[in-house]
Image (cartoon, rainbow over all chains, first blue to last red; front, side, top):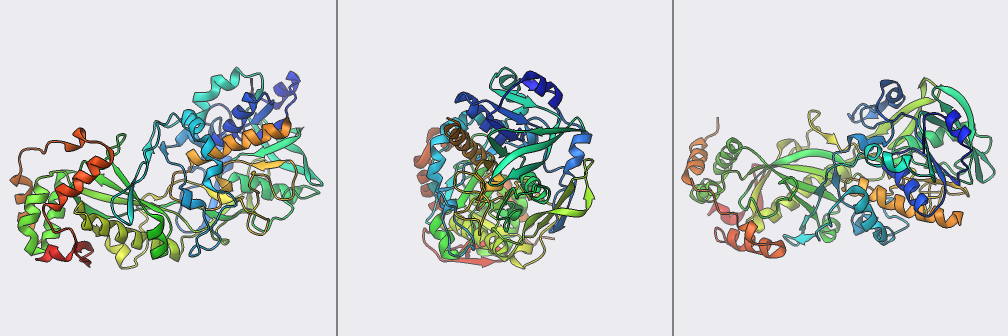
Length: 478
Length: 63
């Protein structure tokens, strides 16, 4: 069932067991999993079934710190959420991403990857993914990895008919949950505005915040200010440990074996460090991608390298000349350290149409990110040379400690942390079951629960955790 | 102006027949292992890695 307003929804007499706020990949996945278990739920989205400027305006905000995207361009506020501009790259977080690493403060999840592995098959089905190939070592430090550039699933488009036909999922569009109200250790209700009109409350035995990697923090921060009893009883880390994936070009390479590692989907080749090499160099996880360039670029690179090693001119001409398109750019995307100072806050001056404070994102890359970029490129370049796969040149600004360029991708549009998973409330907001510490019936879904970020594009991991949460809620409802 | 631009021209013109895609004949680890063997024909397998002008090179590259 899909309703265009709270008024229509109320007229239906539908009685949900779970209120899910947000219809992106996380919220929609939880709802569909609940429906499979015959648990009725309501799926609220603040936008309509397609993009509108008016809805999107609520996502405007301010970033303080490093250059970043306009916040209203970095996510989408309508049915299906930010999957509407997802580019399709997929990979689950690595097993070692979940582990505590002594050189990364505040790393270590309260769960291992094994808790989501039972949901990998259903996740691949939801996202239309083939099976991932195993990592394959190319050296003792570097693995070839399978990072799939899939046909991106727009959840609103792909699952709209499924949602409309369900008697167990009530989608309510144009309905903005402004805040949650708690009574003791339970959420009593969610206050809503529907079609820009105050529309009372909605209630159910359980609530799931699935509004995105920035909005989950905003919703809970504002709720904590509004509710008589706290919605997040121990909010020390609420909004904190926010993370992105820095993404920059790292250098050039002449790759002599141009075809050996290419991805079937995009012709690029992806690599990542082994756990041992990360530990030995005290860096975070990353992936390096080889992106072939036009022949003119190859010619220039051959010439550049010959300048550096004239003695190898003959060998270079023979080897590089045999592979006419071996000149490549090397892209780097890597993990960001979980740092308390990086956080989502509520603006003290700017509000949206409903009077709710806009987002203020405080975000900077630190020394560990910088070290990971340089040392990661060194590891990768070393592996290429050792195995005679190619030769890599690191860009000058990275070698010389220059500023990050502002004319590149900069980051992955991946919003993680803010309501991170932790053993206790000192270091995070939700427990191993995605339940808010200290609350009986409030859960969080999406990448805001990520304790650390790895390098993998987050959608596959979001969906796997959402499948798991849906199953857990179904068990609770039984 | 690059001091060795003629070398780039030479490299591009030197090979006019595109290499047969060996990858198409192999799969998985076998292909990767094969690439190591093919690559190692040109240079010695073990050599210390040094950085020069930003390039990560084997010491033997300079010989």
